[in-house]
Length: 157
Image (cartoon, rainbow, N blue to C red; front, side, top):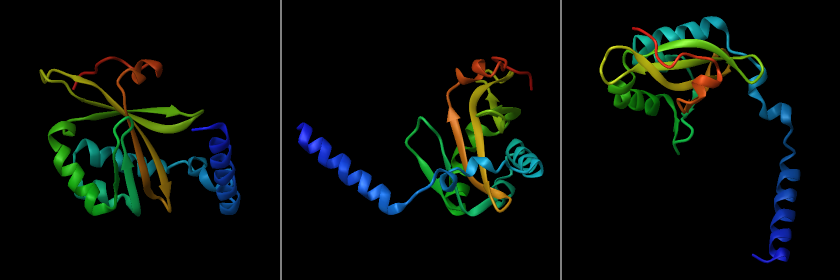
């Protein structure tokens, strides 16, 4: 692209954003922390891998993403299907509560290791809520993140 084409594209993008009149407070649902009771129900449903109970916690607009994977699951029906497909991988997982982004509650998921003798790091679940229901679970799948939080490399069942 030529510099003129880049400048033109940037100008059009700025005009589009100005028309949308987005404000950072409208985009930050992270300001509202999840209720502890909702987090406890999420942990219980996930650790028991009760798909119906887990999906029931989601808002009608509920969704899940898993960076770095390019996936976005939206709606209770698709969430239930996803959890059913991944049962073999997640069943038997345990959570350790942590905080991210300056104090926002999150959950570190440990999944069963291949030998079945313990649990190993899998992902960090960051849960956004709306109307005391789960709106979005961002599950950051990157085991090296665990050491950044001072979490152990393995835990016993």
